[in-house]
Length: 379
Image 1: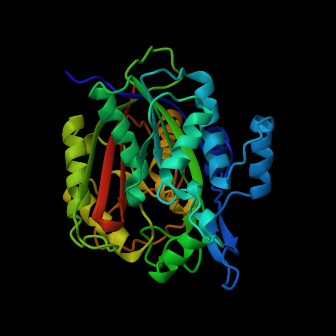
Image 2: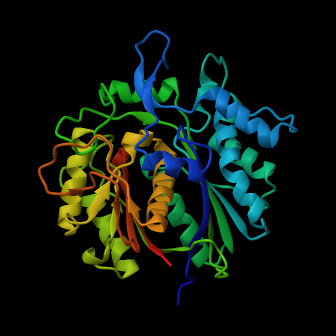
């Protein structure tokens, strides 16, 4: 019999706040971090979700002013996200450190004649792990935009395999000229605040955030909350280097595998935290996949209208917000959605509403045909 795996603690750092409570209260009020930001010197401002650097530095100095090590913006986000969890839970010889990121310290490349050591993802992970005294070799999950969801899966599967007793999962990406330029070259950046699943959607907003979760098999029953990681799956449909599958095969298979392992039926799912990037093809692909799984009537939202697309942090951040929804028994609306813009029916959440949430389905999709899903149960 496999060990039961639980998420018992988490935290996040976003444009809406530097802890979970501030984020949750902002979401209840419908606040969004998406605004116009000048990111590339010779180009116009883009709609994006960006943490105020002065506020970030002020918050960082509250906790880490005594340290003389130089940290990048992203590293400060990661440290602030993880610090409250490390304070409450023991780091042992059998504790895993798992970092999810797509680009890491990519901003270090700007105006550099040589490749800085800090740009390597392994060096980023080692720096954060060393700071907090982790004793095991860091694990890096960097699989495009499914990285945050897959990091939960990696923790679950490695603990169940007996490799570790528990794990700290941390995820983060920051806004950068490199990322904005890349998505802009695909003509995927929205001209205004993004509108997932809406008829008038025209692209994504890039965001930045850091998130952290503590995952363990050693549940004591004394935690403030527990969410069991019931099932997970990641499937690559190999459709295209950047374009989503038109049939939803990869996402469909991921959801089906995760729900099969979790032993839950479509009608048992209470809420779907979807990927919802607000690009024409991604949202359509998701609608097809959800309908193929007979999930079209389940309440669903995308958090991209609040946070933008936070790349490697998005899956973990959105999982945390979905668990907050379950704890508070409140479904958050999919921001900026007004009129259905996909060909298949979906039950898009349009306003704050109370609901009894026990089973959560979290999904993600990304470049290269990668898709991932995880099923969480509120205990």
